[in-house]
Amino acid sequence: MNEKTNQRRRTLSILVQNKFGVLSRVASLFSGRGYNIESLSVAPTEDPTLSRVTLVTDGSEEILEQIYKQLNKLIDVIKVVDTSRENHVNREMVLVKVRGDASVRADLIRAADVFKGNIIDASARTCTIEVTGEEGKIEAFIDLMTSFGILEIARTGRVAISKGPRTLKPGRVKP
Image 1 (cartoon, rainbow, N blue to C red):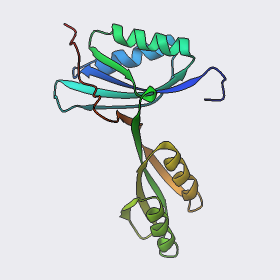
Image 2 (image 1 turned 180 degrees about the vertical axis):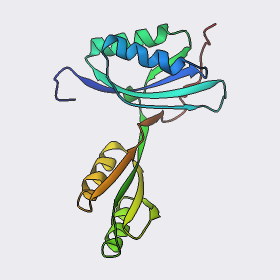
Image 3 (image 1 turned 120 degrees about the horizontal axis):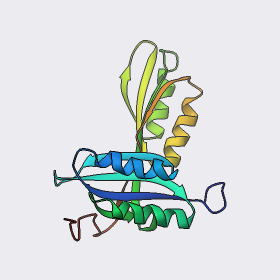
Image 4 (image 1 turned 90 degrees about the horizontal axis):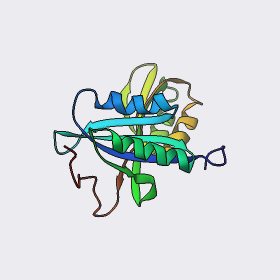
C-alpha cells in the first residue's frame, strides 16, 4: 500500500488495436480525469495488428474500478487485465551512466556482477551499466550507484505478464 491509506498500486495490461491515436486516447482518459500514470510501456504483440500497453497507476478501489470501466469503453481497447491481481512476473530495465575512471572500474564491475548487470559502454571517465529486474532491485542498484556519481539515468516502465497458461489474447474483438 502507498502512503495514502486507500491507495493501491496496480499494473494493468491492456490489449489494443495497433493504430494511430490509440495511445493518445488512453493517455487522454487518464489526464482528463486527473488519474496518474506512474509508468507506461507500449509495444506490438506477436500479432502485428495489436499492441500491448502495460500501465502502472494507483488509486482507491473506486478509482481503479472507474479506470477499468473507462478503458473498456474505448473502441480500440480489446482487453484489460489487472495483472497485479494475478500470479505474474514483472520487470523494468535501467541504464545508469556513472563516473567511472580506472580507479573505480573494478568496483563498478563487481557492482554490476552483484546485480547481474552488464557494462554496455565504458570510456576513460564514464561507465554505463544495464540492469533488469523488479522495482526493488532497480531501486537498490540506483542507490548503490549514487556513491560513484550518477551522471544520467534512463529507465523503462514496468512490463508484466501472467504466469502459467493465461494470456492477454483477445476473447472477443470489438467491431
